[in-house]
Amino acid sequence: MIKILHLSDIHIGSGFSHGRINPETGLNTRLEDFIYSLKLCIDRAISEPVDLVLFGGDAFPDATPAPYIKQAFSSELRRLVDAQIPTVLLVGNHDQHSQGQGGASLGIYRTLGVPGVVVGDRLETHKIQTQNGVIQIITLPWLTASNLMTKSETEGKSMSQVNESLIEKLRLVLEAEIRKLNPEIPTVLLGHLMADRASLGAERFLAVGKGFNIPVSLLNRPCFDYVALGHVHKHQNLNKSNNPPIIYPGSIERVDFSEEKEEKGFVLIELEKGAAKWKFYSLPVRNFLTIKVNVSKVENPQSELLKAISKYQIENAVVRLIYQLRSEQLDLIDNGVLHQALSEAHTYTIQPELVSQLARPRLPELSTGNSIDPLEALKTYLENREDIQDIQKEMLEAAAKLLAGKADLSEFSSDGQLSLFSK
Ligand SMILES: [Mn+2]
Image 1 (cartoon, rainbow, N blue to C red):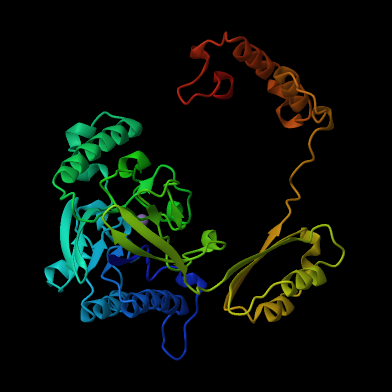
Image 2: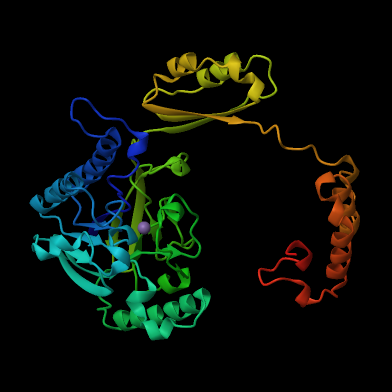
């Protein structure tokens, strides 16, 4: 049996805006948090000890992190090297320099020939000798159109056509790789990808170059004993039958507020040919907490806000207070007192939102609840818009034509507007 620790989406160096400078170290506390989470993963790998560590990609926010951030990552990797635990570092989208053209941040470990460290920056199979036997790992790094297709192949095609041919190409090259596998040896597919069935976390906002979704059916193959994924920050198993498990361990720390409610951790696997037992272990990461309260309708907004804050455990958490109020209530808010009330938090932001005074109440004629004839609706709307009375008749005529499907396209100017507006 081969024991594996699978972690992913370290993103060390992210989310500094949620931290502050630690006066003792001079470092951003969120960097320290991320390093600590990574350290706990490596501690576990060493104390077990596992036979292999699989990293699912996205080590840093981008391919050129500051030297001290690279060093923080390297020092943790070094501990695995010293413990002689082989490690596969898969290249994620955030690790690739300018869409994969300029290499990857993790490539340096191969260049240096760091013992036991394998860098997965292309689709290939690695046979790795561990303390408890040999294992095959197919690495499938983040793919973009430029990895698999030539420019002439993508030219003139729509995004969805390109994606379709990409998946076909991937199917072929993966098939070729699978045929080369030794069926006697435990096998893992390690991929950094967006699977079509995954539910999302922050990665959808972080991704710069949008990639394509990969059908789970492409990964769900009997030749794999375990499918180790990276990219999606929310931990999940994409295969209900669990045969093989298709696992996103998720990120090891909360990258932003979209991950407020997600558990963070890593996965331990006991792997044999044809069987994988796995378990998710959560990490004690810092809490994120959104306090949202609407005080626009209360008499004493200040005390309402304090009451809302007091309901939560804010100590050591990253807190955001979002509250809605009317502009005439602004004088009733004492910001100093709010800051005092939030001072126990690790960091906090206060985001007042003015309930718009401009928002007109809905036209009573239109809020009957019944379905309204569009032309009637437009008429009612125009009657309430004194500023455009002069074109009311023309608009109604144009609308009637459009609704009847008789609009002459020549009446539209080139930018799609009705010609009566572009006179
Ligand atoms: Mn990613």
